Image (cartoon, rainbow, N blue to C red; front, side):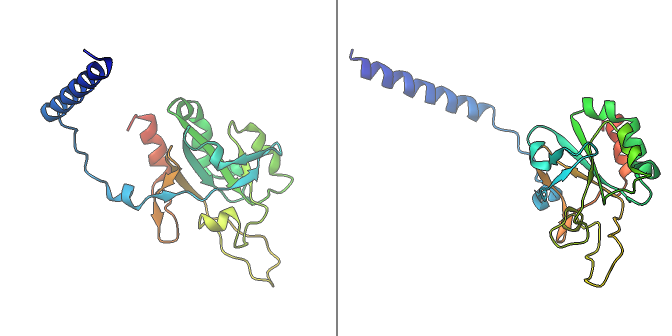
Length: 191
């Protein structure tokens, strides 16, 4: 028998065996979740952390699930109950495969030392209030008009970006978690 004929017989036998196996044990069908269908890529950003190092969202995609917590820079991170829970339970969240990023406008000098006690990056959006800013693209601050001299105000919110880089959307902006502390406690319970 020629070697080509032997290879052809082996290949055909393999295909026949695989087809028979698949007919006997079909793939499990999973129902499509409407939230999964509405998911789109999360808006990328690169901001400086509390140690003046650049942090980019894309650097965590495909390696971790990401929790992004926006907070009011005037109150500082210690004034935000969601950030308090994230800091308290960070070791457990990290072991569950989560990365946490906190974002606000630049902090006042008297509030900035608070960030040094956080085990995750606390980022500052220096262009908050502009069309291109991270805070605006995530829908947590208003666009500032040319005559406004006050800094942009960030509305506290928590977002989940899945490992594949997708997040739920609410119209033109990512969808914030309705119950941030409940979500954190659910992760701790293994839900």
